[in-house]
Image (cartoon, rainbow over all chains, first blue to last red; front, side):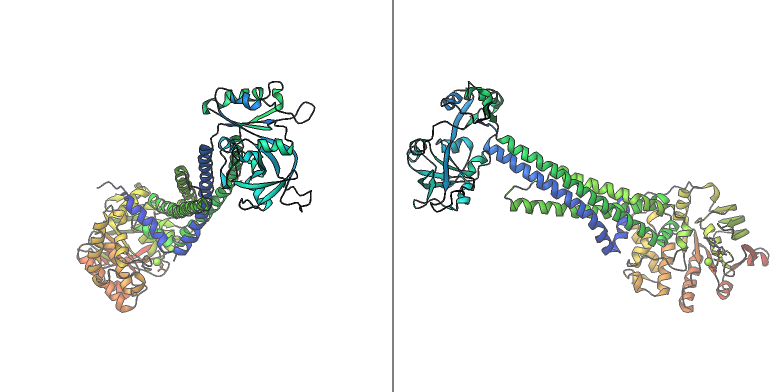
Length: 399
Length: 227
Ligand SMILES: Nc1ncnc2c1ncn2[C@@H]1O[C@H](COP(=O)(O)OP(=O)(O)OP(=O)(O)O)[C@@H](O)[C@H]1O
Ligand SMILES: [Mg+2]
């Protein structure tokens, strides 16, 4: 008398049997894996887009440097605008680890207009600043059109417009014919800047030379904001002494900041939003899983005769269970793969439209497929258990 | 080969489908089981094929006491020793005759290439060598039943159980199927056929009649000891 032991199915056979159930109902397979695909695609796209944007910011910060510090005149204890001493720039320049210093100084009461016919109230939020000629290098701001101020144009009524200021004034390119009114004097537009990622305050500025501001607009020569580049590893120590150096008599009246912080804070806010979107994607995935479970329950009901036949051919309960589990896993994996492909494609397309390098982190792909398998497994457990529990004769009795 | 002793089967709801049935079938026999509708024929066949367990009584098949085997062991027994043919064929729609027969060997532990070879041989043997790649819906009823028979015998089972194999067929196809079962019997397979049709039953070497769950006559005992 021989011992009886069921034979194991090879992995290939197991997959083939699982897939057999899918072949015959392509439309149902498509629809029920679609739910999974949408969930996974949403999650991958959210992670991909936020990673791409993060990578873009990292690259941007790399290019701009995180070692820029700014020191702005704050307010006095009496609530008045504080004044930085005239020596502030040279004092800051003498801090050891500081490599560059530049400054701007607001020209009080110098209103900026496109022409003398503009109503006086319409300043469009543009302010006139005296700017040091090394401002662009120090703040890593790019020139879009024309030229930047040099030692000679700084003496003359020439102006360079920040990106937003140029747009608001309706100046698209500099030219000797284009003049704007600053504090009642005509200034020729010689250049236009690109948006400045680190110091957005100069986007809305009309920048003129320090000497000409003092000569014709009554500028007092006091800087209102200093920009200092420090050796990267000493940024913190420079930040600690910057206020006291710029204004030794009233260090508390100086607002010291690290402009790259603002960009990172923006990113952190985006990440909170990303988490929310990710949660929505997860809900879609769970709904997709419910769809797969539903499909599997129906499939088991419809295929009772097949189950009975397989049992009569010698399939064990375990083999029936494994067949339907495999089918459920394949169904959701199919959706998962489609979702990963769609999510990846959405990321690439979105990143390209934003001029970013597309980044989809491998952990997101792996996590997406892992989540899919988990969903497929959970969705298949109950239907597979039902199929396995069916007695062979009951199963065969259904037509 | 098979020995049933005082087998009772009561279904939920109290229907006594088998009520003290006993039968002994030796290896190599060809047996017809006849009886009116509801007399317990299918129930008997399910128990002979280990698809169901009796409520009480003893069942021995191929040397195994069925009551002592667990579900997995019964599955293994079916996979290696028993072939079934059903009235409704139970072929997978949209797949070829060859795949249907080869898949019948899935649980026997054979490799895929071997399964396909055996399937092709079995189909040739039932006269469908020219229909290997036909999908099941492209076949006639008689051809379908022959595919089902090929599936049941491809693995060379010792026991073939057929529940009304000609029930869904016209008389010509039915005769073909019966001839095929006769051939298998001549080649050494033990064959048990359930039928309504008394003409078919008469053509078989041994007939067992069942009524109300009991064996009421057995041609082998009537003629006073076979063989
Ligand atoms: N799963 C079941 N649950 C309850 N009663 C059942 C079940 N299967 C069969 N029966 C009953 O058991 C009795 C015997 O049924 P069985 O199917 O064995 O008869 P049969 O001889 O094969 O009939 P037929 O020739 O019509 O196929 C019948 O009265 C039937 O109603
Ligand atoms: Mg019956």
